[in-house]
Every structure is written in structure tokens, then in C-alpha cells.
Length: 198
Image 1 (cartoon, rainbow, N blue to C red):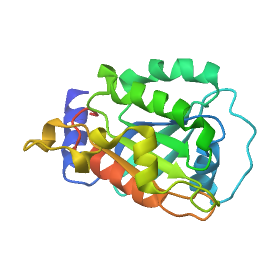
Image 2 (cartoon, helix red, strand yellow):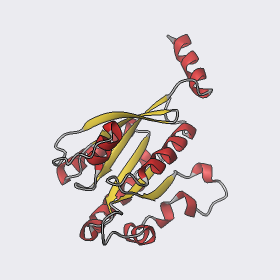
Image 3 (tube, one colour):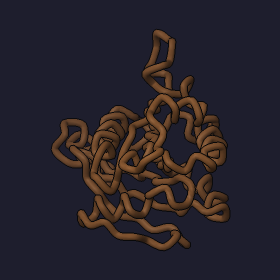
Image 4 (cartoon, rainbow, N blue to C red):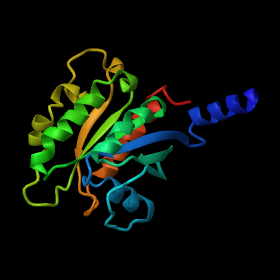
């Protein structure tokens, strides 16, 4: 068994087989999590009822295969997010950029994730979703409203960025297939560099 695991690790290192990892897709209810997973899975837009229990889909980006979990976003579902943290390799937090009234609630959840020691080395992709809708906040407005400026990788003022958790905000529209592809490619590149997953 040891020899098989060693050989698989070598093949992964040289890019001959996909790296497998666990990815959480989280955010408040109605942000677009289930719609995103369905769109990635079979290319169809499906209007989902609120997610009542966790479900997952497998997707491959480059040389990374994600087992992506949608845990739901209603208040009771948010209580279980943290139980998944010890085994996760990446977090995608989806924010409805048009739901201005709930941005303080989204901010509280994002702050909790970005300050949680359990996932301090895990890449975090924040998707500002629904840019196709009128009244959606722009990137700079969303950064300010969510209070994430100091957490974004591109804004960290330190010489040694390797010790900083990768975090970025990508504006997106699941409906119009804009942005989230770039976000997942960003995540794949950071997970490949991250030693957390074996």
C-alpha cells in the first residue's frame, strides 16, 4: 500500500493524474450556490428550491478534480459549515451582489471564515454573483461592504506572500456564465500549490 501511495504521489507531482480535493460552496441562501453546481455539472440553468441538506458534485478544472459540497445557506445550515472545515481544501463563498440588505449578514459569515484558525491555510474564493442584474454592486463597493480588503491576496503588504492565505474576489454571473470559470481556475492553481491535500 505504501508503494502504491508513493507512486500515486509522484504521478500527481508530475501532473500525470488529477489531484483530488474537497471544496465547500457556501454563502447565504439564494446567492446561487446550487444553480452554480448544476450549471457546472450539466450546463443547464435550474431554479432550485432552498437546499435542505448537503449535496455534492464532482468537477475537474485543469489537473484538479473537486468534490464540491453545497451545504445550504439558511441559518440552520450555516451552523454545520464549520464541521466540514477540517477536511476541506478550498472554500468558495458566493455573495448575491444585488441583495444589498443582506450584505451585513454575508459580511459576518465571511469574516467568521477568514478569521477561523481551522481554515487559515485554505484558499478562499469569493464570488460576487448576479452582476447581470440591475443594481448589483461593483467589485470595489463589494470589497468595502464585505470588509475584506485586508484579506485579499493582492492587497497583502508583506514580502513573504507564501505565508498568507490566498483570497480573492471575482465578480460573476452564473446565469450568463461570466467570471466563475476564472474563479475556479484561480482556486485550482492555489490548491495545486497548497500542501494541505495529499
